[in-house]
Image (cartoon, rainbow, N blue to C red; front, side, top):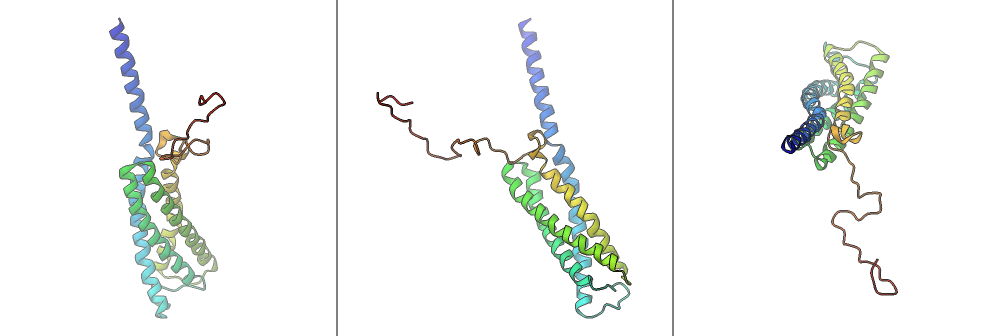
Length: 202
């Protein structure tokens, strides 16, 4: 009877551990394909943005694939900057998805937030360019579309990376119970006990 009860407890503990591990990798399994998708789109934005900016600098705005208006140079500059930051953030993100630890989250999380912030600026300028109107070539319209899509997919990627903030069962977070509780941090020197009048430490 006791052996049966002990085996049942071990089974339940293993089952609970397995469920926790599965929940912990949910965000990881969702973020991995999204990372690859965003990386491809950022490369496309970099290619189209570089081509359009080169035409604009050369004064070839009358090219059939170019066109534009007053918001175009600002939009192109931020689109290229967002694509470069996005590509770099995916390198750190790939390393984090491979390790999936708290220490790797810092680099991946900060770079992804920065990339999303600049992408959001490019998104706003793209909306302004569309609102101003005028004739715009197909390459410029494709660039606008990719930047608009990336503004939302990159935000989703950032949220998946930081899912561990809400619960440790979703992935690594920033919580450290030694911080903010008055306890010594990691590597701190032990505090010697205070001596009383009788010479006995408390």
